Image (tube, rainbow, N blue to C red):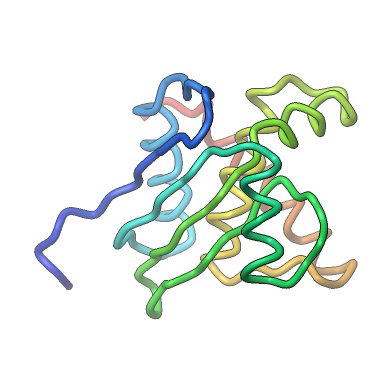
Length: 145
């Protein structure tokens, strides 16, 4: 194991101001630990729809808008990568699913981490397991240490 500091970073390519980074970072660290994984370096990049659409076109050849794109550079149980999140898409999804923005943001944050942990969402059964895991991990946010 490397002597480098494990880390979760938050960056914004838009005017979005992420609230309570420390609490979210600690929660995501607990989520990763609960899956038996460790952190190398994970970067969350908050952006707008156009920024994420360009990434979707350039790297995935998908001409669609999405709320999240993750680039997994993990090696075995050491999680690493970049997770791009469209703040506008998260806001729209929160309205569509009738949940508050903070709740939907947590779902998207943990969704990216769960992908790095090996969970997929291509089939119906994979999507059901992913949703179950998201709910389980979101519940961990409120647990005091």
